[in-house]
Length: 349
Ligand SMILES: C[S@@+](CC[C@H](N)C(=O)[O-])C[C@H]1O[C@@H](n2cnc3c(N)ncnc32)[C@H](O)[C@@H]1O
Image (cartoon, rainbow, N blue to C red; front, top):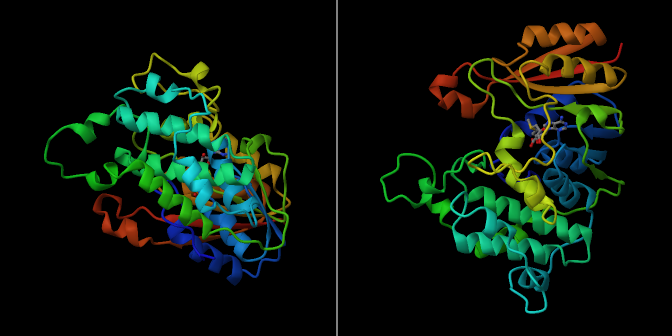
């Protein structure tokens, strides 16, 4: 079993600092048996908490992420076999395939033959009887499609960045051109190594943070980050195509044909995603869990500012502590020299 989750190319992942966050939790001598990871994303916090023997509830607004939570957090024992992986990557005569991706996304994100393979793999996934195996295979497909995308994102129709024959000073052409089936198989074998049981009943949920009905001794809050400068690209824009794959049988009814990237509108929400409402949403979430231990991940130069955020904490929790993590990655990037990660520990008074 692996100790830290693999690199996943997901915006805002806390993979690089998860051990620092856990050290802070230990230094603070926080006592808790259960955790709720409200904005779960790649599951780094949930996975660490699972490793540490806690009962874990993973949550994310997107179904594709909750499938990752199901594969890694809720799943204690199921693994993909060689036979499963062969089944997933074969076109079967007895299945009548639809070609929703190939028919609707020509020249947008992937090459034609890749779109067809994506259609086939998803529908093979849906044939698997075990929901855990389905979730694991979906994980592999999400990683495969992300790795092959310029900027690891679906917010632009920009397949031409891959196909144009020009000299590039950016991106990773080698990853974009990786064989889709081989990459998918590799991710299937990879995820098997991350499955383990901590003998707790862990679960994966798929709700918006403000409507989540779950609770736990400790709540980890890592909301979308809205930079004070520039326009905000929300999670839905970045990853809507993965949400489409997670809802394969329905998604064609939700395609917005007015957008050149044919955004799929499933689970699009403004909650925690607009400059206008983020402060109010943060107030609501802090109030909701005011009697729990809260770990709040943040960055400076955002909306709200750290000072405004601390003002909100003061409204609901008397005691909080601020930790600043100077991240190696940001130190290398000159324009973001002063950008750093913040971790707040809030205890109920
Ligand atoms: C900063 S990322 C969390 C990253 C995560 N801690 C990790 O290490 O991968 C924020 C996450 O919140 C999710 N999200 C966005 N709006 C949400 C909402 N209203 N409720 C729940 N999750 C939301 C996004 O899908 C994204 O995965």
